Length: 223
Length: 152
Ligand code: SF4
Ligand code: FES
Ligand code: FES
Image 1 (cartoon, rainbow over the protein chains, first blue to last red):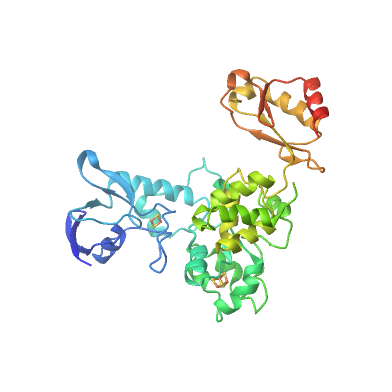
Image 2 (cartoon, rainbow over the protein chains, first blue to last red):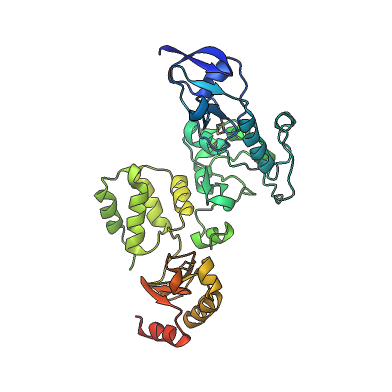
């Protein structure tokens, strides 16, 4: 891979072609906040906290730095007023699902809870880290998303967990460590299923594949 | 129509069992049988080499897919803004009464399914009901009863 040069916050940086803006910035010690990114996993682009501005003048635009690949001469700004405003809004929204967002983020971007938004402390921010870990690294597909919009949620497929958890994660449930809010570990800590056993299904709501789908859909508010 | 996995296979083969065509395949299966049963999803997952969680992800994301049986006759009542103003609530009541169904319900004999939709793009006809693809402007209770009579 050849080296190319990019400018981040006015600094000239050498980075490898094919890197994302996020990787190039982190390589140079420049901080960009992220919630849904993990080095081991494919970028997903769901939290949008990592947005940056690229280009200059009229041609400036906002992109997700975890997904955008650098090219020679790219100009990037990571902390403009516009960008920080976006991050503040995102955090303002997330606060109503997750009430212990790292204080450092809240302070840095001046996020405050807004009474217009109703609290719904699910502690799931739909970053998909657990789902992607179980799929990409373990190939077990025990966890998955269902629904869309306000009812989108992470569920456990008990048949899959009975089949795969014990063999895929023999020592401990490794997905627990990937959840940024800790909602999974708080529910499943110490409850690693034995061979042939399904994960105990507290929330996040689970789809039991042996149930009638109608019942499942009722439970997730689809019918 | 009763489910036949042979037909499902035929649809899947029509797309060369290509997992990139998942949505198209599901649409065709749904078109054929009006809904997607759990067996079908499992079979499709198997044939395409996809995990079940991905199929649930897709089928619960798009409102078009139904994971519960749908009636032979599809009835939709528009509750979009224009129709609402022009009396959609009353029309919906009439239709629900005529079909003996609540919105989003399918009759036990799988004859009718009642749905609400948001704006069909013909607000001037509002309040609108669509019966098996046929648009009707503000049908009366009698008209609704007549259609119900005529249906197999
Ligand atoms: S414990 Fe089960 S759900 Fe968690 S990563 Fe391992 S296989 Fe997946
Ligand atoms: S880290 Fe880029 S969108 Fe979440
Ligand atoms: S609101 Fe009913 S057709 Fe537009």
